[in-house]
Image (cartoon, rainbow over all chains, first blue to last red; front, side, top):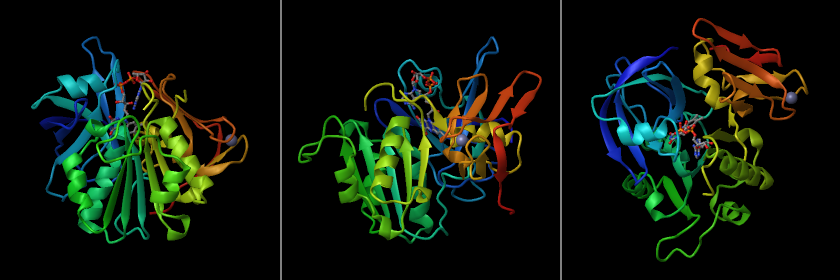
Length: 243
Length: 86
Ligand SMILES: Cc1cc2nc3c(=O)[nH]c(=O)nc-3n(C[C@H](O)[C@H](O)[C@H](O)COP(=O)(O)OP(=O)(O)OC[C@H]3O[C@@H](n4cnc5c(N)ncnc54)[C@H](O)[C@@H]3O)c2cc1C
Ligand SMILES: [Zn+2]
């Protein structure tokens, strides 16, 4: 698989620092929920930087050529500030994908699904929720850790999904919670015990976010008795600061 | 601060070299015998190219380095990669 040029068809601000980029990719072969692609930027002097971004949208059908990415701006970053602040509709963008065959959810997969995301780690989980809304029958739970109410990506989308019987959404606030939500703090053993599906439910768990977040949550799950083979993880890189 | 990613981050670079997805392949470390899905290895992308290390013993499992003319693939740390027949 090699690089190809996509065109920005639309952009949508999700939060103050994150935005969704709709890409038109001619001959897109389709993708599985959870897959990602690589984006490559080339400077005038030939210097290149590439980064991975999860595909936020579920694959609709073979006639569609649009996919969505959601990028959270990392202060001082090389690539994400360009994608969030500079890239505009009509611009070309070099991509390589879809790639990744492990951190994916397939509708034919059996058993309930536990999704646990931190920050922009919710992006591939959103693709899974979307794919599940179309083709899934098993129960799905999302535990989503954010700093504060304004950091929630896909707010209206998640509310809509949460209204369906199949999906259970629980937000965890690490810095500031909205009125009426007393708990402020990171995901810990108690919270996993209280809100995550149990080992005996036979769930497959998908954990995604900054590396320390993924590490912590995966360890909590295993300590709670979850089979490590059913805990799938994807690390997005270090946090720029405490979450 | 843990500055590594995981095998998922190497999927793109490996897709230039292999027709099958390697992130879901089962990999055995030559150093300690640890056997796991390649996605669970520790990947460093800021080194020259991409380096995957064993999460158990830190042995370098695989390296991919791309220069303007060639790509180097070094697999010395792997005993095997197991890929399902499709
Ligand atoms: C498989 C995969 C999928 C990904 N999907 C997404 C996605 O859907 N949306 C998204 O926004 N990002 C995603 N990422 C992270 C993304 O690839 C970049 O790491 C991120 O955009 C920062 O790149 P940058 O060039 O702006 O920062 P860099 O120039 O690489 O780094 C600048 C500084 O920020 C720190 N840093 C790097 N990455 C992060 C991070 N993720 N969080 C906090 N601090 C960081 C670095 O240590 C450094 O100090 C994904 C990563 C992987 C491996
Ligand atoms: Zn090893």
